Image (cartoon, rainbow, N blue to C red; front, side, top):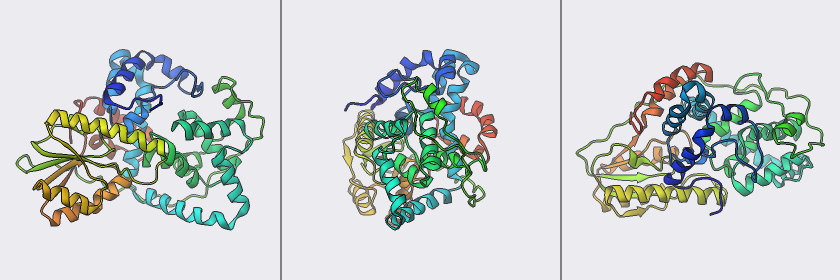
Length: 402
């Protein structure tokens, strides 16, 4: 597969080693610059691997600090922790994601009722707006599954304020194609651009900044919006407590079920296993490239688990209840271990699966990494209060469970 991104744990570790010399001051000074898909990357390109946990946030942050000290690597470490923060924030406000999903369905149905809106939307998806940077970014996104973080901000701003398209549909376009998109960082990032996440604070794309940060690759002759008025405020529910972490029964007859939410679950301390399986079901309707990348990462994780535990890996075609019940019954399991999935499609499927398995006498145990268990409760407010928890995260043992 032709991609710039590591697709196995070994490749991710090699990429981290290669990038570590650049994760200090060089990263802090150049991280917002984007030389395009054919230029030299100014970021680690590890975000898809971190998203599927081929490599952990702790591993990446610890390596940078070992090389540069916390002060030298602080900006890089903070960027790693932004995704953790977003996930923790949404974990305590799941209604925000559910509302976004409903909005997308409703707005897609409305497109047929507004011809001008539909034309703008179709031109945006096709990269045919006449805005050179935006149209190039559409091509890069659909062909490579990735955009530089600062580019994502400008893309979302142009989508919402210049093209006057709803942020919800832009977030859906990103979620379909971005290799590293997770429900939290994608949804909340778009909300931030339109002034919903930090009330009243929006992001306005500027032609001069785009020209500068792209190294002059774009002229940006087409006029961009001069103002970015905040989207009408919506109701943000108060945070709900994070559910307690689950723990496995060391005496139970146990199978391990690997999902794309954590492809290195074999790195955790697990009881004796008698069965091993994985599913290609990642939820939603991902673009073909995104699905292939996720499946390659999953296959790598399944192979590593099979080697470590001496088990023949199996495939369960979907997270549907009947397929899982059959797998559990065939191996006479009374406990299935999988990774704790945060808010999103995989969690929804596990939530539906757990009571069905329980009726068969099979306990579904969703193991949570200590990194998440420590971090999520600190994401009740903004990122800056959350930063106080970063030293606690860095003090954890690699691969520690809650």
